[in-house]
Image 1 (cartoon, rainbow, N blue to C red):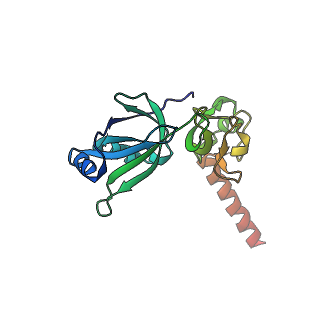
Image 2 (spheres, rainbow, N blue to C red):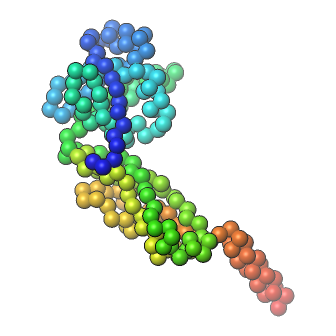
Length: 209
């Protein structure tokens, strides 16, 4: 794993059942459970404010976390469910699943673009338009790529980069089956305007004939 996995800090919940869960909420915590990985389920409490911040950032269910619980070894987890209050839409319970190194999961991986100076289209004033700054992939938990790299060498104005142009790490694949666009090099706005005016003039001349 080359990338940095964000920490998710929690406390072990000593009590179980609805009473303990209600008490946790009164204490500003969100009760949760950690399961899987050939270990017993572990009841936990997550700080409400920190959890809410994570949820507001988006993609909570497709982010791999390093769960830290006092008295227990750190473990990689992914969220499987967030229960919410039907009226306030605030989190009331979280289910987290421990991951084996061989577990396959869906994660968003950022895209990095290199060799801008070797792209003729950019040298001519073209603009790199990034359609997908990150791509959702099916990855193996024990070998998650930090990023996908797009080499812009040789790209001209009007050319595109699709997912098939990127060499994906072994064992990973996109969640989308079709060959979708990652980025393209478009003409600078001034050039596009000039071309549009030229087309208009040609149309006017054709109309006069």
